[in-house]
Image 1 (cartoon, rainbow, N blue to C red):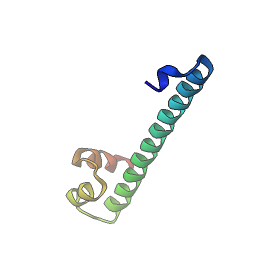
Image 2 (cartoon, one colour; image 1 turned 90 degrees about the vertical axis):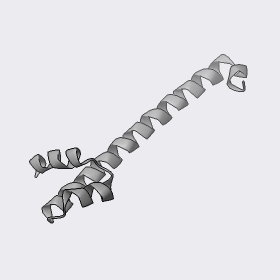
Image 3 (spheres, helix red, strand yellow; image 1 turned 30 degrees about the vertical axis):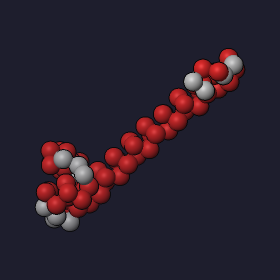
Image 4 (tube, rainbow, N blue to C red; image 1 turned 45 degrees about the vertical axis):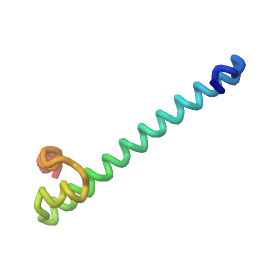
Length: 71
């Protein structure tokens, strides 16, 4: 209801801010995923079992298995 009371300029700014926030959240999520994958690759290189890596990184066994090709 509060947003419905915004004037045109304030509504446009609000929509732009919301778009920027969603984009930023997407970028953060992508960076976190890449970080988990980098850690998983290091764990694979150290000889850790795939199941343990999946547990610690919250990546699936399939994703970790696919990462072996990046090593």
